[in-house]
Amino acid sequence: MEITSKVLGGAELIDAEGVLKKSGLEANMKVGDFGCGGRAYFALQAAKLVGKDGLVYAIDILKAHLKSVDDLARFYNFKNIKTVWADLEIPGSTKIESGSLDFVIITNLFFQTKKHQEIWQEVARVLKTGGKVFVADWGRAASPIGPPIEMRTDVGKIKNMAQNYQFSLIDEFPAGPYHFGLVFVKE
Image (cartoon, rainbow, N blue to C red; front, side, top):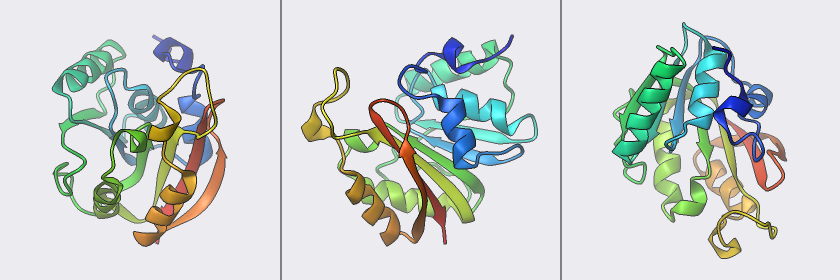
């Protein structure tokens, strides 16, 4: 079965395949999707892009989401997705080997937590030097959908926090009509 962003849903908000390609996701990479969610929009597109020799860790705190991801991976016949239960607010909870990932995806996560430092600490731990991080979250402009504006995280705050953990911003772009996209590289 052909897998497209449209089939997976969510393409109206963010074209997962397009922004991942733009961010530098390539075949054979090892990827962590932090806070993958039950529909796994990004994990599934990442699995498609990294191919059979790549690996995607779909990470979430909700076991029901991980069950859904497992079901979707089976439906689309992806054998390169591994679900991981973890509380991303606790560094080390992913149990992924330090310095083993090439790419990390963080979408719509920062507005849901105040523990940004802990999340960046875990990203820094699991990512290789030279590895990339794609961050997309709700912009602070008023929009007809999404969380209340006061819950949304300021782009500048995310950039500063990333810099504190030795990440350099290499690209910034609109990730959809209501989301910003940032790409960082680990120094």
